[in-house]
Image (cartoon, rainbow, N blue to C red; front, side, top):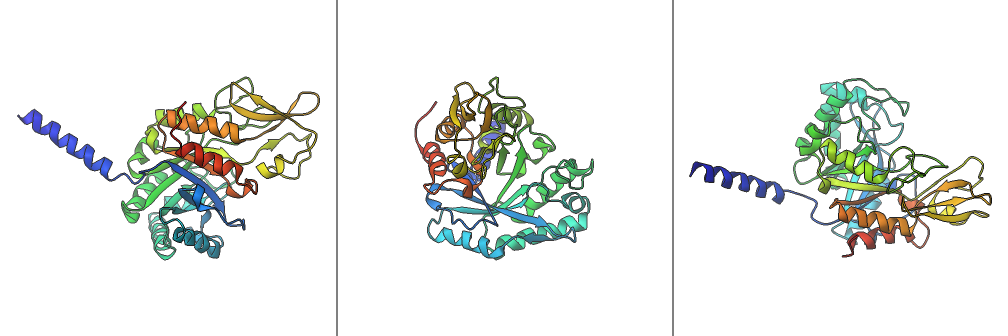
Length: 338
């Protein structure tokens, strides 16, 4: 009888945990930048991650870039009430995290600012984009204590925000610099930055490993996060709306809209990696990027792996027709499977 009661209690706990889950539909999250003037079409989004907020110069507060634009994005919820708008804090070269997280008073003050911003701007949560705890690769300060302090930051920020608000993080594809098992109970989403993984003559966001994949594939990135302790249903796979060109190629820009206008390049397809690339007339790979076809394969993979959904950087890189954003949304929301 005692054994049956224990089983019933565990089942009840499991039910309660699932009932508290905030992510109830497939995620299509776009990073939208403070410097862009493009107004996102909420029809093809479930989440907007506003980039960026930063740790301020006191190491104890929050500074938000272009607050007026953030307010405009929140107004999109009047068009689509289910849209979630989250403030992303950090980004490449965004520092002062190490000092803030290492000082209990600074950390408490910073978290209070985050909570106040959520209330003031009517946000749905916070996304932490510290690149990366314990690393100075981006030219920011770091400390060996950063990994443990990041765990404290996440735990205390979750307590301050409560269960009704989203708490997500952006992570390196290799699933490094974070104690994922420790932070897992406190985060709703882990956004894998599965791009910038290499440069020509290699892909920067190959879905599967091919001879043109050097460091890591998207599939390997997802598995690395699962093996590190994050359940598949909390993961979003990041996709790039831009490419990288070799130094020998002179392009006006690296956004999808720019790459589609690139002259004198030959469009090719890697049927193993499931991504496109461009070559010059001599057959040399000179550009790596994403297109509708590769997005379809990635979305099928997301559904096969039962991930939370897709994320992409960044919205304004799409063309005027919204080719890539439509591809992400339509494929994630469709019933098709791999």
